[in-house]
Amino acid sequence: MDLLDVTIVNVAVPSIQKDLGAAYSQIEWIIAAYVLSFAAVLITGGRLGDIYGRKRLFLFGMAGFTAASLACGLASSPTLLIGSRFAQGAMAGLMVPQILAIIRVTFPKDERAKAIAVYSGVGGSASAVGLALGGLLVQWNLFDLGWRPIFLVNVPVGVIALAAATMVMRDSRSAHAPRLDIVGMVLAVSAVLLLVYPLTEGRRLDWPAWTFAMIGASALVFVAFGVYERWRGRTAGSPLIDLDLFRSRPFTVGLASWLLFWIGFGGFFLTWTLFMQAGLGWSPMRAGLTSVFFAVGAGIGAGVSVSALAPRFGKWVLLAGGLVTAGGFALYGALATRYESDFASWQMVFPLLVTGIGFGIVVAPTIDMLLGQIPDREAGAASGLLNTGQQLGMALGVALVGILFFAQLDHDSARGVDSVATHTHTELAAAGVPGPAQEQILANFRACVRDRSAEVDPSVVPASCQSAPTANPAIGQTLTRAGEQANAVNFAHTFQHTLLWGVGLMALVCLGFLALPRDTRLEPHEAETEEEELVGI
Image 1 (spheres, rainbow, N blue to C red):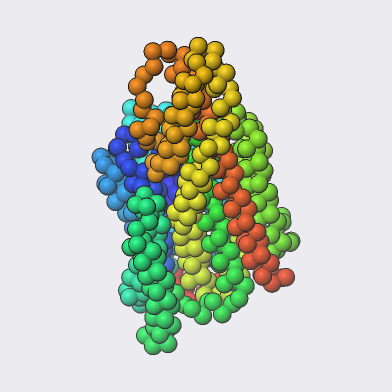
Image 2: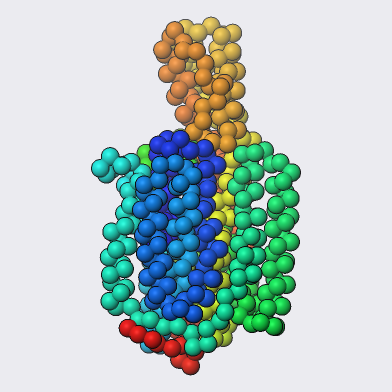
C-alpha cells in the first residue's frame, strides 16, 4: 500500500489536473507531499514504536493511512488533495518503520533473511506496479469516479490488513525505550522543507531571491540539526539520529549511495510518465500497461538477487545491479531518440526489463547488507535512516529532475520544429498555400512550439498556439499533426538527456557500493533478545 502510493499518482496526473483544475505546481505537490511527510515522520515513527509498542503503532498508522486514502479519494480541490496526501504520507511514516522491527522479533534467525527478502522484493516492484494499476483504474473509470479509485482502492485493502494484523501480529517494544527528541524532529523536518519547497516552486515563480535564501537556510538548519543531535547524544540521550552510526564508513557511503539511487528513480518515474503521456500522447491505460514490464524486471531481479546472487557474491551484486540499471537508462534514452514519435510499447519492453532487473537487484538486498555494517543494537535506528533516505531521495528526485527536464525541454524546443519543417512545407504546398504564407505559418508554428515548451505546465496551450481557425481545414490538420510530432521529438530528446544524468547518478552509486567491505554478504542478523520485550500476540 505505502510504496504503491508513491507512484500511482504519476500516471493519473492529467486526469487529476483536468478534474480539479489544478496548476502544475499543485500537481507536483500532490506527488511530493506524500514522500516528504513520509520521510519526515519515519524516524520519529520508529521511536514511537519502541516506546508504545510496534503492533500498536502499525495498527494506528494503517488505520490513519486508510482514512487518509479515503480523504484523498473524496477531495474536491487541489488543496484538500495535497493536505490529504501529507496526512497519508505521515501515517505511512508511522506504519512502515514497524515492519522490519516486527520481522526481527517474529522470525527465528534461520528464517529472517527470507522474510526480509520477501519484504524487499515486494517493495522493489511496488513502485512500478503503482504505475500500471493507476493507469488501469483511471482508464476503467470505475463507477464514473475518474482518478479517485487510485486512492479509494486502499480502503478495502486497509480494512482487511487491519483485521489480519490484529489477529496474527505479535507486539514488541524496546526494553529500554528512548525518549522522543522533539527539537531534533522539528529541525529535521524544517531542514527538509526548506530545501524541497523552493526546488518545487522555484521554476514556476522564475526563481526569486527568497528561493535561494531558503536553500541556504536549509544547509544551516542541517548543520544545526547535526550539532544538536551530537549534544543531545552526550547529555540527555535518545537523539533522533544516533550520529555514532556514521562512524562506520561503509554504512555512511552506502547510505549516500542509497539516497542517490532513489533520487535517480524518483526523477525517472516522473519523467518516464511525462514522456509517455505528455510527449507521446498515450492514454493512462497504455502508459500503465507498458510499465508492467518494468515491474516484471524488478521482480526477476529481486528474486534472483536475494535467493542466489547476494548470499554468494555480496557487494558485487549491488555493483552489477547499478551497472545494469545504468545500461537500461542509456538504452532507453537511445531508443527514445531513435524512434521519437514512433516509439511503440513493444519497443520499450527490453529497456524496461533491463532497467527493472537492475532496480530489483539493487533494492532487494541493499537494506540488509547495509545493516550488516553496523552493530545489531543499532539496526533499528539504521533501518530508519535507510527508509528515510529512500523517501527523501524520491522527493528530491521529483524536484531536481523536474527542474532539469523542463529546462532542457525549453532549451531544445527548436529541435522538434526542425524535424517536421520539410514535411510541413510539402503538405502546405500541396494544400495550395503560397511560399510567403508558408514561411509565416511556420514562423508562427515555431513560436507556438517554443512557448509551449517553456510553459511550467505542459498541458497549457499558450496564446501563440491559439490562432484564429483557418478557412482551409487541411492546413489545421497539417499543423496539428506537425505539432504532435514536434512535441514528441522534443520530449524524446529531453527524456534521453535526463536519463544520461541518471546514468551518471548510477555511476556514483556504484562507486559507493565499492566502498563496502569485501566480505559483505546477505545474511540474517543476530536477534537482540536482551533488548526486545515481547508484550503480546
